[in-house]
Length: 587
Image (cartoon, helix red, strand yellow):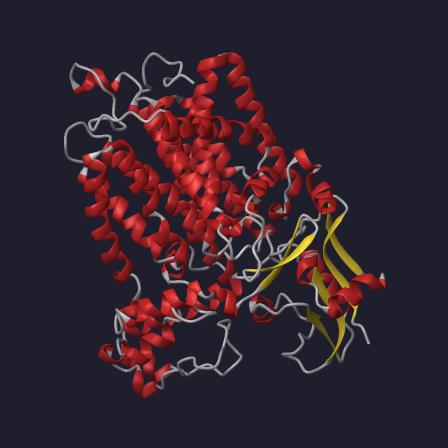
């Protein structure tokens, strides 16, 4: 495929910057407007509980004596943080009345329940970032306030994707990439939630763009400002989830393939910055920098012994991670849940990158992302850079993320959530594919780009308020995927306001509601007053209703008996496929 887009010169810088701002504001507006329609999902209750603890720690740090006077340790079972044997006990008033005490190992262990044994395995940056809503929208309710930080990160990343690609390979490239980012249903859905995966995706894509900016500067040294930004983003990614620790590996592969001095300097210096950021944003390790890291790694690398989760994939149930999904599962998932137009452009971009990374890598040690040739810097800026090196870098990341989740005995539950960054990278590849399509087909290429964007808009519109249940028309949408033996839902995103209203109205006095699983999100619904019906086992009343989501791989005997009984009282469905079902509680 040709390396250069159709335009003879690059767009001017300021129109592209205004375009990036427009993408940010449009994405932010869309996400904020649709946020109230999305139900609280499985992991959000845990996030809200952890954010409440670190919010209290920061409040105590501001005025320890005043905080200590009003501090009442929470009762067991009253928090949204999971309580497990071996957890650090809540500190007393006498243990939080000075700043020195707040930095003690005991206080840090309780206020920062992160980066240790499950269920506290994730590092804390995603929760720190979630506190942004406290400053930007302090009057909002707790859940939308916690979602604002991830939404803002998602919108900023969309603007950065547009600006990076449009400046180098044309506006059509930027438009398609930004649309593939904002209108891919799984990215769109997860981008709302106060969880870790969309934030990790934003940081991963941001690190790719920052790395590219750092090495595209002419000369023998990288752009040091972007080196620092690259290191910060890598540190935050590692401080969000274990997956983020693997982020540098594709960069090392690219640096080795291209033998690029600037890339190696970026990785070394940026790596030092990343380590400082990782520890600086992780108070859990301040009192145990060696043993804390070892405990975190042991916990996250032995999840098969602590959290086995059965998954139905193409009609067969796998007890992951003790059992492995088929090696091709990530490829299948990519085809199943990506809108067709975005998938085609992503494949074009990925094919271009794979060709250059595997078969056509120039071996010149001076080759990098910048433009080559004579003339001064202004003359060079008029010419677009070759797509090849950046396509190779992006394709390496995409292939790596697919392979990482496909490794035997890797957790394989929750659809594409555990390799969500691959879809963010695919959006960037789609932008490169769009540039090549416009070059090859001209107006027809632009028409195909518009068609892909319209398909993305239609996909979101049709699937709201459950975008995570989206499946491609290639397999007949959600009904076709269910017939293939795929789990229609997994994250409790189908527990819509309509279902909660039905439970409130139809649960008689003296009876309760039992959910098939019990994430602490249900406690939030109770504490916020949204769920007024008694909640079993918090309320010790005989259950009247059993609520389960249509995740057949996780059905136990009681759920399967209810499902097979046919005595359905209420159902939330999309495209005639049940997502959440309410049954009379079996005797």
